[in-house]
Length: 74
Image (cartoon, rainbow, N blue to C red; front, top):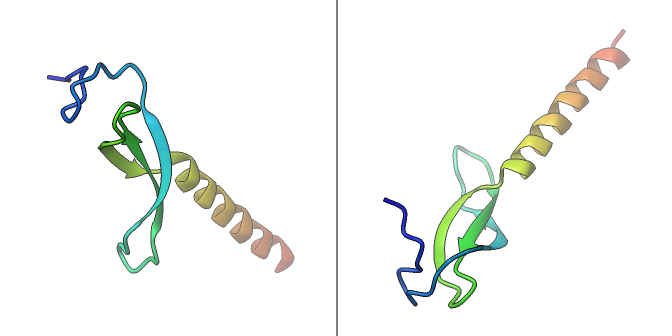
């Protein structure tokens, strides 16, 4: 069940504060862009995840680089 109150300060949580962070080294990478979801009242971190926007951007950039390499190789 999802709580609508912060487990730390018990204030109602109607919005979250988002903060960009660097996740630790995973799978041989130097790190991942990530975000934390925090209580706006007390700042306690309620969750964290890989930043989906940054992940998509990295994938698009890598694909564009590979396509450009192939086109130059013609």
